[in-house]
View 1 (cartoon, rainbow, N blue to C red):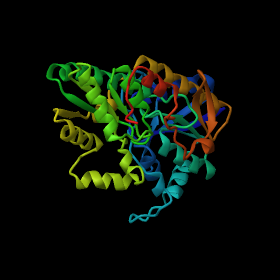
View 2 (cartoon, one colour; view 1 turned 45 degrees about the vertical axis):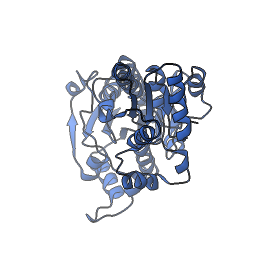
View 3 (cartoon, rainbow, N blue to C red; view 1 turned 90 degrees about the vertical axis):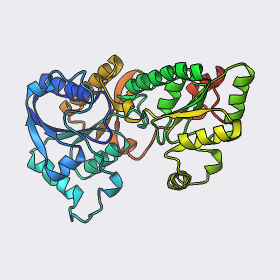
View 4 (cartoon, rainbow, N blue to C red; view 1 turned 30 degrees about the vertical axis):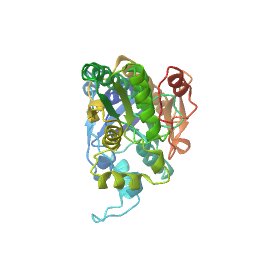
Length: 357
């Protein structure tokens, strides 16, 4: 039986997207008579009808390639049902283009926002399969997302390299890592890179605790301190404020991000030279690690089996070391946060890492 599959990548890019696309395609060609339509730039392409027929050859040579061969963009879920100045009904346009392309199924590779829109389309009657990608590892219902391990490798390398310059100059180094809502990347890279202080969005920090941790290192003749901080971390004094309000406070203080605010406070309180390092989008780039190449392939193959079984409205997941799936409805709108009593957090505490509590 022939199946015509549309595929798109949405939201921030990450290593492993092309490997997952390849996994879906190669397994589909083995399992059934498959045709693929590549949709450009995520949901933007689905709304605007920007797509192309894909040949088998396009899925060769992309296993190790970073980024996405389809392009991507951010189309916020909150605006999907809003008709803006362009007077486009986005949901109606996506449904119409799905029909125009003659699709039997739509594969969506993305993070939390992508999954919410995928569920919306499933509720509108389209056949949708999701694949969870994000360097934040914050998609509910899966132990891991592809892209996360590569980002941990990259972020850990940053922390490793900062150690030598911090030690040489006796500085406090504040390293801001990605993770706006969830701190998985900072937690893992902080432990792997030997950070002394790890600050996460889930555990609002106390400035006095951070200062005390630095002073304790000085008492033990440690001339430098490495702080790994997630971009979404915040001072406990701001715990009653919404994210936009915290962002406004930083803006009013002329701080580009929380890391600069933290560094300023540390230098004021201690008199110690404090520097900020923001690797930014460097954490998203490059070739996927061997782990992520395997994981992306596993997820892609499982997605092809879901298509073969016509088990739509699902997203792929890893549960207890086994590839499985969750319904899009169960996943949409949920975020997997770092529990404050998580084993990895306790592991960090047990080796002397301060979480600023």
